[in-house]
Length: 513
Image (tube, rainbow, N blue to C red; front, top):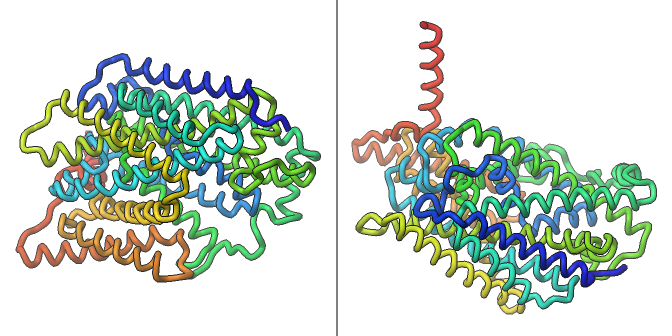
């Protein structure tokens, strides 16, 4: 057990320097306005796809996925299969709308669909508050783990991570963020595959021993874990897959950090390739993490446990104390990379949402592209510094529980936001009044469900919130139309039925020709 050596430290430092240089390299072109927030049209779809993967896979996932299967079963792996629900729905119903409208942000769609600046600003405010909390926690947690393994002061790790992300987010906008995400995502993929192969080769019995534990010790699925329950409010494998699918769909549809990737192109074929590649990467790597977790369970039955062998630190401890010198530095850099990638994405998405969704909509006069860029840079700088400060406070232990509660609450509300996107895309007669009513009703219901009801599966939350939003939104829209005598009509191409109608017309014209 050699632990973290000087060679590993050198590799970690070289890696961080290389990421910074790469970010500055892609920032060479002076991009202004929408180019700063959407890229310059030269970013390949496969780069964007890996960036989506790197954004969704936070370091919390990196550490906890292996920890889950190490300490328990593969039950949480089934949540990854939600991709099979989310990706087809997003490709079929939402991406064609976003591509046709050439939206600037996720919440730009709300203004175009409902004709309401207030809805656009509401969506942006909810996202920004949630994202700032998320970025702080994503800096804090992995740095705490790395500090315990490397001996480096946690505040120094937080500061370095934040400063590097701020520099290339500030200077190069989305283009720098996407390319550095691609580099860091690639390091992550290579590192995880190597760790899996190395681990399996050092287990007596190899991968066969891991699969044997599935049946002899129920490491895949416990006997008392139900596959299906007719009561969808209870835990089961089915509701986990479906509920996780709706959660992931919510990220694809209404979270600016993901939707921002879709705005880099209006080519639906490229968008579809992004989604399929991201889905494959996510499923394959999640499976690798769970195999590693079960592999660690078998390995540490055959070998003594390392220091810091807590559930969510078991994989990081294995990296530090079992892998060869040099590889340890690279794999710990991969954990750092996952955090830095999510952080840089958060900074740029918050900057774009504040500038385009809030400040531009509240300004009396149109803001020039040069001023938009400056505002975005200042926002990313301010938010980055603020997130560093909060992460340092979290590391000191002063406000951990309250801040985690706050972040969890905001995550719940942000998840509710997807309901008004679904309402807008599928129901032509829905209007702004209905959207506000649906959002308010689903928020109230979900706060009650989360904090006042016990026994309700967390995987049914999204199903409940979306259903409430749609029912209340449609009723409120109908009442508003009846009282005012107006007939709500969605602008062209803001609802999916416009595309369905267009496809039918094209088929008729082709048959007549």
